[in-house]
Image (cartoon, rainbow, N blue to C red):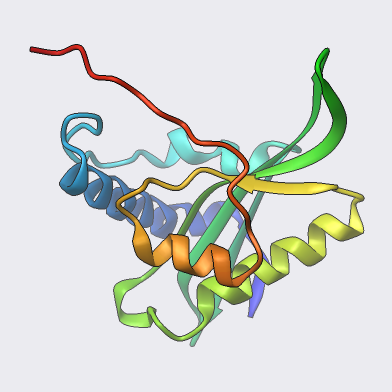
Length: 154
């Protein structure tokens, strides 16, 4: 079952956020800090903000995955205005991976965004995350731009 996240889910979401940070730190310690413990009060915006969409996947009365996204209207002098949604985080507990849960969460988000007239769903994915890239491509996401950097650290 998928439903909107509630304050009672934040403890589990905090664990998932720590898992995301650990994964990113492992792959890119030059960018991501050592994993930290997330405080529940620092995550309250996930359930309190009107522009944040946070959904949880429930199995056997337990939160086993979540997706969080932010809605906004892109206004830029050189770009067409569009109502958009940006996926910030998606995480599936290790014991529940490779069972289609991430796909179900994204499909649910797409349905919800369609119901509120969102025109585009976007996300950033790190180049080392080949599993996520494959999932997004399978679901129809296309590369729209490349984010590149040049490290000047010695």
